[in-house]
Image (cartoon, rainbow, N blue to C red; front, side, top):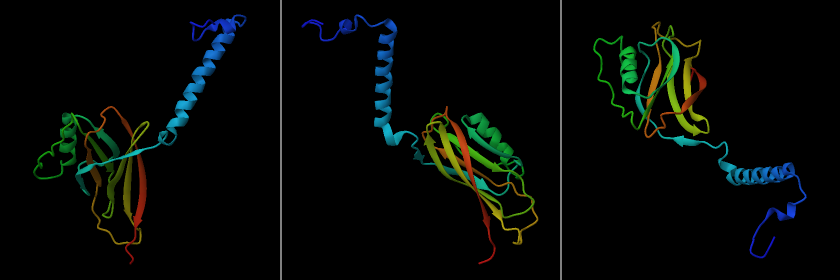
Length: 180
């Protein structure tokens, strides 16, 4: 190394090419490790995302259990028609701006009595996409319920959502007691 050269490989003239590659790999891995350590608390962290209710209820035309992410207006219109198929008159389709928003729908399936409900309680952005938390309510078996078919559901809109993300759903089942 000369005075005009701030850095040179000349100190490694007797070192093999493989040793040079090993040194470079150590530098890259060390730098990567330091960048991960400096990110510390953000690795694995999540950010709560605000959302707005679109529709929820105890009765709909969807009798199977499913979780949906809806990212276009045609899919939303088709879902709305299916959801409201049991109503005498189709209610107006709630507006969703799919260039900026994402719609999430949860359907609990069909039950032979009243007392069941679905409630989306939180949306979090995690490293792998969205994590959506749902409370599922069931009646206590000792409670009196109505002998009716129910299909509980909840739909929400996530403003400014990333359209290309996947979602995982985390359900918490709550048994509602009828005793005070």
